[in-house]
Image (cartoon, rainbow, N blue to C red; front, side, top):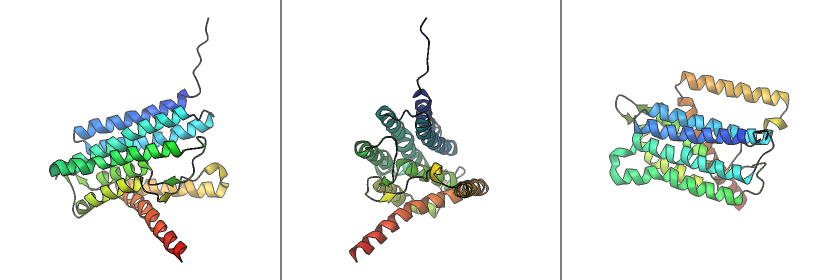
Length: 241
């Protein structure tokens, strides 16, 4: 009798599948104009996206298949889903211009993932990112909708609404830029005190997010986006001198 065994890769691949499923659910709920729920499913996809890489390293099954599967899931959850979300939240009333601009996160996100895959040399460890990571773009759009979309008015509140066009274009272009963004710190290389500080800050951020209905996290992610740009400008100015 053949003994049935579950391959080690099943665990991280299941988490990647859950990432993809959350992206699909986000599109479904956005189509129903339940935009808060749609945004939350993008955030859930980001959690699963983080966990699948951790799981792959824990069971030591990092593979090219996993990298490709992860990118396919990401292009749905962090490309198509946030594009459709911001289309329903803001761009739907702008006709073809709205369709084109809201499609940019999906299009440039796909280019960004393709570039990442062909330049990835070590699948077991990832360094800093060239260009804005696609999950960061998607999470920023999600918190924009969570924080500023008014269900009563069925619109993003002013004055934030005036910045949606340039913000979506900026996030899209940053994904295919050469600007460097830092990867998350690896806790295994940190001291006990540094780990304690990390989790304390994380707990404080979660508490503030709950109290402010996600508003503080929107500004937090905007700060990360702008920091990458400002650091790039500073480095080029300093290097030129």
